[in-house]
Image 1 (cartoon, rainbow, N blue to C red):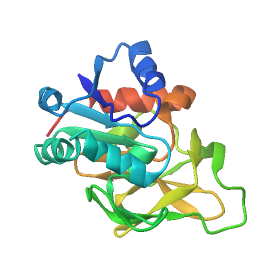
Image 2 (tube, rainbow, N blue to C red):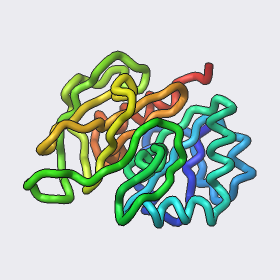
Image 3 (cartoon, rainbow, N blue to C red):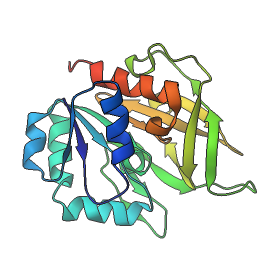
Length: 202
C-alpha cells in the first residue's frame, strides 16, 4: 500500500491515476498519523523549494516523514519532492531540506532554456530494483530549473545531461528520488512506479 503525501503542493491526481492504472493500491494522505500504516510513501511536489518545505511543515508532515524513513519505510520523492530530500536549496536564498540525502539544490548554470521542459535521457549508473526492466538510456519527462549536487556521487542512480550532467535519480538506503515525473513518462515511468511498489522493506 502506497501513501501519496498531500501537503497542498502540486497535482496528485496524475500520480494517483498512474498507480490506479496498474492496480497498485494507494491512498492520498493529508495528516501525519495515518502514515504509520503504510510501507511505501511517495512525496510529490511542484513549484519552488521553500514554499514546498513550508507547506510540508505546516501540514505537520516533516517529522512524520523523518520518522517513517528512520523506521525503514520505502520512500520516493518526485520532482520538488526529490529536491526536499536534500540538505538545502539555493532557490531564492538558502533553505533547509529534510537532510535524508547529503547535498544541495542549485540552479542550472548554462545558457540553455530554463526551465528544462520535456523529454530527456537518463543513463543508469548501477543496478537497482527501482530500475528493473527499464532500458538504460530511457527517456523521462522533466520540468525544472534547479537540480541536485551530491556530496557522495555513489548516491547517483541515474544521470541526465542538460547543459551539464546532473543526477536525475538518486538513492540512499530506503530512500529514492527522481527529478522527472514518472507519472508523465509513459511506459518507463509506469514501470518505475510499479518497481517501487513491489520493492520489499529490508
